[in-house]
Amino acid sequence: MRNRSPWHRLARSALPLAVAVAVVQTLGSHAVERVQVTAERLGRLPLDWRGYVLLLIGPLAIAVCRRFPVPALLATLAATWAYLLLDFPYGPVFVSPVVMLFWVVVSGHRLAAWLSGGTTFLFFVVYSTWLIPEPQGWFHHTAVAAFLLLTLTVAEFSRARRGRQVERERVEAEEARRQASEERLSMAQELHDVLAHNISLIHVQASTALHLIDDHPEQARTALATIKQASKDVLTEMRGVLSVLRDGAPRSPTAGMDRLDDLVQHSGLRVAVTIDGEVRPLPAGVNRAGYRIVQESLTNITRHAPGSRVALRVTYGPRELAILVEDDGTGAAKAVPGLGGGNGIPGMRERAAALGGALTAGPRPEGGFRVAATLPLPAEETK
Image 1 (spheres, rainbow, N blue to C red):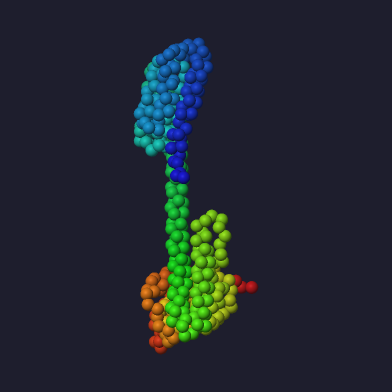
Image 2: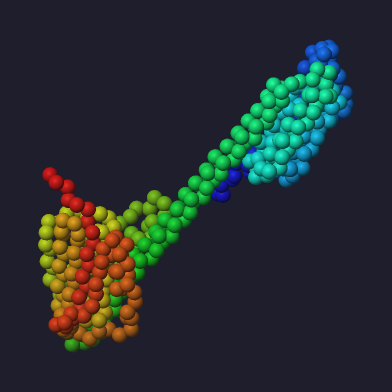
């Protein structure tokens, strides 16, 4: 739902405000009429139809201030001045000008509001000096100026404060959109890694099964069993990744380094695993990135050098996690055509770089291929 600006919300409540101001001005002016009319020194006259019409012009202007802010302000001030020049009683008639000056400032028409405020001050100086029975001095003029200045200053402060709030809400909304975009990119990368690994494995094992089904049915049976497990794994991981699209949906365990044994077992490759250092819990980002880097490396070997011997070394250092995946390039089977190169290595580099780490990938001098990654870790707590 789109956020509403403060002056938009004020505009929506303009009609009730206009009714309230109309009641205050008419009833309030009627209440003070007898006292002021009997005081001859004030020189005020009883309210007639003209006075009540002028008292209602300000509230009517408030009712239409959303569409016509500056004309509404000018109409309110003109009605107020006319009311005073006709010698009607003082009192709540000044409510409408105050409301309209405040409104025009917060709605963005600041220059018009300040010019109108200055003109109003000049009117009161002339009016209270030459047009009433008891002329007022500079103390009265200073009080009027202070009141107008206070009204405009409070309006400016309110406008600035609400402007900062609107900007803060805009920044927060932009940040939420950015985070949602990053989450979608992360999900797309997760899906890429899950599908690339398991579909490549299924493709390779299916080719092997077709090749061996007549002459070596037992070996073909093993390949088909691997296909069954790989298809189950890909469905499970896809459910885990896609579950974030449903609020409250249960999630499967996140892929992490603690699942390397399952990954190696179902890779269809001969992998020698070496773990150096003290195995310990990893930050979620490093844990997931390390797993995906190993998974993508095994996927590439399955694509391009199936049957090769693979050495996987994981080193838990004090400040970094090091991953080394090497194959000897002497695969017992030919690479399966049609799987393509994809974005595996660039994707791995992006994962490592996003965490402040690094990844290198390239042929080994003695043959085969090597992927080496380092991912930073927080310092171990001293016991």
